[in-house]
Image 1 (tube, one colour):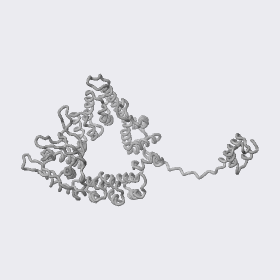
Image 2: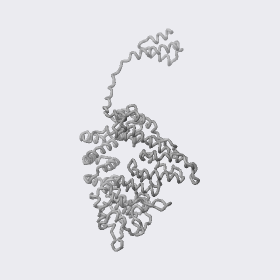
Image 3: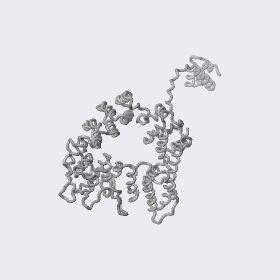
Image 4: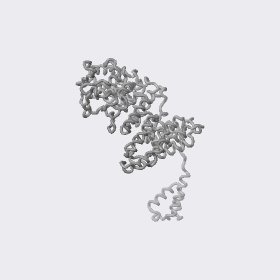
Length: 569
């Protein structure tokens, strides 16, 4: 080490500054050897670090609350790890091959694990929270399984903050019976105004509504004038839970809201309460529009649609401007009938039952409008008698013809539809706007499944996807058998399985796992018929192989969680 370098390294006060200056200017220009300069810098660095005064220690966070639930059995823990590792899914359409899509099985696994009362393994909490962040449908059960440890992590990691902001993490909310804590969080929301504030308050309101419906309305009324329009609409929609006539005063006030969306939502809820004042006003209106002409034999329903949509009608939720392709009078008439209590028709039609009313002929081509509006009313009012009458038996058509009962929207145009003795009643009519999937929700689960099974047996699967979505899971034996038979018929028809990918996906998640044994022969490769599409037999074999493999995995998942060995601590 040269003298210059010794001087640089030996100065306790200014040594580091001199070393930096020498490095910047150049070791040669300062008469310092470069290697010696680096040695001096290393020594000075050690000296500087050794002389640092430690700062105050940061306070460690409080540990997560204790989770008393039992741990997952080893097999179930391995299964969860595999599902989370493959949660990206097969993705895409077209040919999927025989490999099951494990990502689609995560919701079922989480639901069973929560029902069994397990806690998530600590080492799997990060991928579990990642899955919940990516998929909203997983959040309720994923966060329930994650428990207090999952909440503890989400509160401290920015990437999982959305799980708290959208209110999905139930443990973050106060007990709905703790009025002071609820009030504090509720009133803090409008002032906070940060990301996710509305979602947290919506989750809080939903919890209070479930525990104390009247208390939830009082809470909402206390800040109603200060709420934003989108929040007011969200809170009104949440009043569907536990809806009763006790909510009528608040909803009647909401009919005068400055937001049309809020007015419409409030009117729809009131229309679902047959004893409400709005329902009474609608009943009075339709009595003047629909009458029974007894001069005909059999009697005929006569319709006189409204000629205007006045301010009172708009206040009660009617939308004045019709959708494209629909006349104003037809549009206003349909809204009025859909909002009227179904009980009024017994009075209008001399005490006839719903089935008898639906069977009556309608003059001047108004039958489709009436049936579509009655269907919306039956679904809204959850009236099983009217839903049953409007659905009728599952519709049948001659071979080769499309189903007579198709779904449409309330804005569908009204085609000419003569009525009379030659028209069939109930489910046999093609009525735009009469949605069987919505009507089915008003029926008991077993009856719903039986109707859909009969429909599929008659028409196959081309129109069945939404109907199957209205059925409870897992599908009962009758419905499962109808779906499997229809899939086999579709395969024998020689088409590609991609046309039925939606139904096949539902079958993977909704069929009872015991069907795997019956489906095994279908998974074998069959010879192609001459009229088949090229390669269809192989594609169908792959599709059935995937279905069988998925059902077997679902059966194994349940066994791993529910067998006596799994339930031992």
